[in-house]
Every structure is written in C-alpha cells, then in structure tokens.
Length: 171
Image 1 (cartoon, helix red, strand yellow):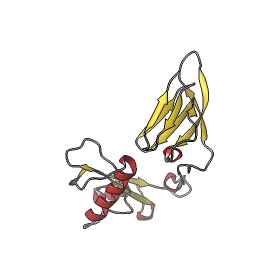
Image 2 (image 1 turned 45 degrees about the horizontal axis):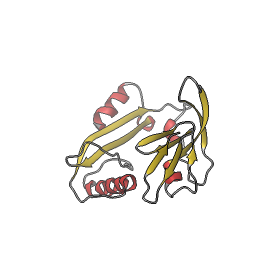
Image 3 (image 1 turned 135 degrees about the horizontal axis):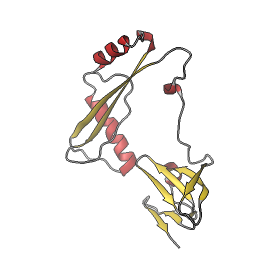
C-alpha cells in the first residue's frame, strides 16, 4: 500500500518531503461485530501485534469498562497518503482535543422539534459523566462520547448512577 501511494503521489508531482502517510487499523474481538481503531504512532512495523493488542484492550476497557482475553483480529488496515504543498493549510497539524470535565462546555444550535425550533445547548464530553452528577443535567444538552452522542431533549433530565449508567427522564 505504501509503495503504491508513494508512486501515485510522485506521479502527481509531490516530492518525498511533501508526502504525509497515516496508517490506521480496525481491531475487534473474534466473533464480535464492533471494531475499535487504536491509535497508530507512525508506520505499522512487523512485530507490532502485542503493542496493538494492548492499545485495543485499553481502548475497549475505557469504553466498555472491561476487556476480555479473547483473540483479537484485524478487520481493516488503511493508509491515507496526502500530498502537502508548502504554504497550504496542513490539517494534520491542527490540535483538536476534547474538553476535560473541568472545562466549560461548548455550545451548539440543536433542533428537536418544529414547535421549539433551534435551541442553544451545551455540548459536554463523556468525561463530564465519569462521576455521578450532583443533580440531573437538564435539557436541551448534548453529550459526546467515543461511541455515541447522547441528545437530552428540552425538559429532559439526564442522570448518571454510581455504575456509570446514563438515564434520561422525560416529562
């Protein structure tokens, strides 16, 4: 894949210093339908399977609160090859991060119904729900986690119990 990408970009006139390669891999437990994409730091080298397995297990445990010792299999292996010209925006250099639970939430316009139209709502990350809330979060609100976006409608109340379960009570 890498060799083909480099040839294709060279044919488009990109020099070696103008090429950016980004590998990604999707892994899952054998027999499951859902895969995760652990971060790859650089190229995928021979002998990386133990490191990839540990990264997958850490990601799995962070999302599902447990990890099995079952066999892990590769679902997809991808390479994104980009030609980057000087004096152009390098989107790979952008520093995008999720807020911590201590930061003020972002705000976004959301649409729940014709009657209410567009409403401004806070947007929290799943980190904000890592501990039980002292009082329910009143909607409208959005909560973004690695695997879902939770929409709390107007007048809905989101609560998190001691086990991390999310419940939305509707009027």
